[in-house]
Length: 451
Ligand SMILES: Nc1nc2c(ncn2[C@@H]2O[C@H](COP(=O)(O)OP(=O)(O)O)[C@@H](O)[C@H]2O)c(=O)[nH]1
Ligand SMILES: [Mg+2]
Image (tube, rainbow, N blue to C red; front, side, top):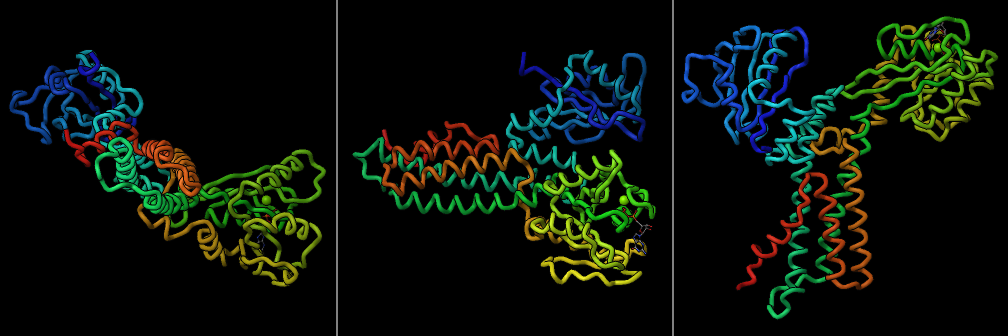
């Protein structure tokens, strides 16, 4: 029977380590544990949230380990949960898991503990996604964003907006269904004001998604320039290790080279390219074509020029290629001379560095960060990092605009009410709260129509 299902899985990475954790969740968690785990206390005496030392009797070995019971509903999943902390080791953890399955548990599917938490109302959908984001985070800013999501920063906001809508819809429905009662009517202008307020909130949330996407996927930084200006040297200087081969021979970097680094807790994906020039070598030519294409996907372009020499035609062509992109012109080799003249160009960001001795590289990293990251957003507790949420908010805004358009054109509230419900549902997609029944309940509880 579905409700009897008790799931089990190893919750720590498989491998050799100090400890492994095996988790059981479901109605029979304690019953199953009791069959395989011996401790000095009888099962009836075991208290929740206390650690017990005992012997786990696996099929082919015994293991001295700890057990803890989280009593429903006060557990991660909302069901009875039992966790075993055993010695870390593939055979031990697998043996314990197999024994649990042998004794009535079933193997948990991916994310099933968290899914169960959602089903039991412990987490909203977006909060569950926050848990996953934290686990998969590759930078500190991603961890912070995941934590905020998990803590309900988005779901609280969305719930508030849904509640505002619920009240509007309820008032409209009451006015329509019980016209003989003189309840205070929801007017069109009231609805417009209410919707404007929701629109502002949603647009404000949506605005955070640009920074959010960078936090989630990393910011793409592309190094461009003619051969031998020091592109690969710059990549190495930014990464702080010798990743790319640097020589004085033109065409040393023939393909695209991609590496990540973090700065102030944000992930950056840095790409070194083959120098842009007329190449005869086929491999180098392909590298150059790739570099030109990459221009379109970069968040910031670092255009490297050799400060110790006047600009050449090759430089000028590349400057032309990126003039409408978010570009930082990097004047390299300033340890030699600084003779290059950029007066006839209108670049806003010009940084002088020496990739050889590292001078100016920190300032450059800071400038890159400031160009892609809005600190107000990254430090606030609400930032959209998940495309599913972005799409749901865009969808909601579409319905909202439909409502406003209708209302401004004088369409009656009963017709508009359909789009209002669609808007409510689109918001509910974010949290998993899109059960229409709630609106119905609200109508009757909030307004007490009588009889
Ligand atoms: N003096 C000086 N030489 C540099 C600097 N950066 C790079 N170089 C030299 O310029 C040459 C080409 O460098 P590389 O990074 O391979 O250039 P790329 O072809 O643009 O990738 C090498 O001999 C480097 O040592 C710098 O800041 N100062
Ligand atoms: Mg190179």
